[in-house]
Image (cartoon, rainbow, N blue to C red):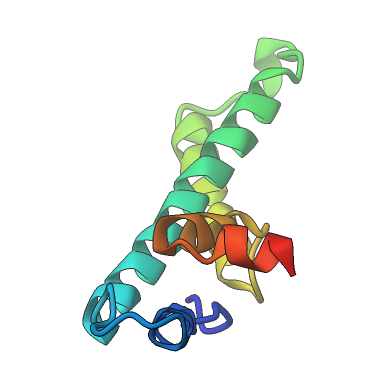
Length: 108
């Protein structure tokens, strides 16, 4: 889902004189997945809120399962949006901030 995130904070910390890496590779993978999942949830909430702004039509075209279908469709769309490339970019920013590499990249 998140193949495109940079996992170089270990090299940065080791180059800065740290004796041990701050995170193990397994922890970095878990953190990367968590950031991607958070972006997916955020995207779903964004879609849900945008859909709520659309005025409701008359009752003639409504089905009983429409709300459930729309919710499932929005969830799947959010997952797909977050899994393509770097997603919306939120997962990379979160990952960089949580691993401490964001400030170092901004200063460059």
